[in-house]
Amino acid sequence: MGKGRTACCDKSKVKKGPWTTSEDLKLVLSYKNMDMAIGVPFLNKLVRLLRCGKSCRLRWINYLRPDVKRGNFTPQEEDTIINLHRAFGNRWSKIASHLPGRTDNEIKNVWNTHLKKRLVVMKKEEYNSSSSSTSTSSHQGQYMDNNSTTLESFSPTSSKANDQVMDFWEYMLDTSSTPTSINNLDHLDSYSNLDTTSEHHPQQLVDEFECQKWLTYLEIELGLTTNNQQDHQNNFMQL
DNA sequence: AAGTTCCGCAACCGCGTCGCG
DNA sequence: TCGCGACGCGGTTGCGGAACT
Image 1: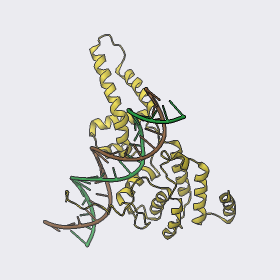
Image 2: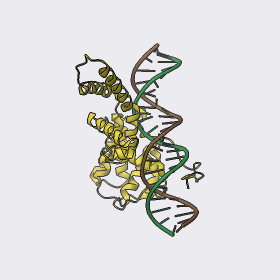
Image 3: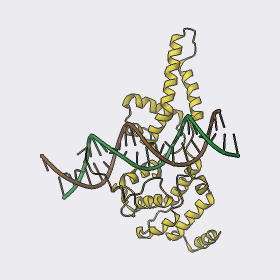
């Protein structure tokens, strides 16, 4: 084991880079179709995704999982991370297990980009205040000042990307039955040019109309609508 | 307005561990 | 017990947008 092991998959045959909408959909549908209680892992072969299983896992855990909490870390969460990091070090998964809805990757990124800097500032201020006998401000007060400054500069995940994912999950979760045939997923590839990482291609993705159209298309294709709804949606698709 | 630099985040990579045959 | 494949984890990279000049 260890060194010299073969790659987890044939690198020349797997797709890399940002995930497309159709790939996301296939991955989510594969989860929706499998018995999650059993914990059957990544059926990327089943849905014929040209993605490495590890990549599927990562995409699911960090982005597509319905319970992933998105957006800003709260000051409480940041404090928790700092405290847990003190206890566990760079054991991100361990830290993530104490923060429901947050992923290890996300925490790692926040730590490396924000909290590390914040700690440096805190240490600096600690040093300054300890060396200055005239300082009357409490450590906590300084801490909060730094904290708010840091939070202001914290850039949230694109809200439009979030909206798209949330729309997607509303759609998926509203659909209690799972009539989808995995074999019918190939036609979704026509939507491959839509890229879910809308932060990178806003023109393509943030268009909510396109998003809605996409979802409507899926509902029709997957046979999840009543006749009346379908008429209405067919009209919508004509637009 | 255009070019450059900085920053944040998603995704990839490699290694360790686990579980099964 | 061994070998292999899959999973899990932490470190790192590269892309794209924001900020700056």
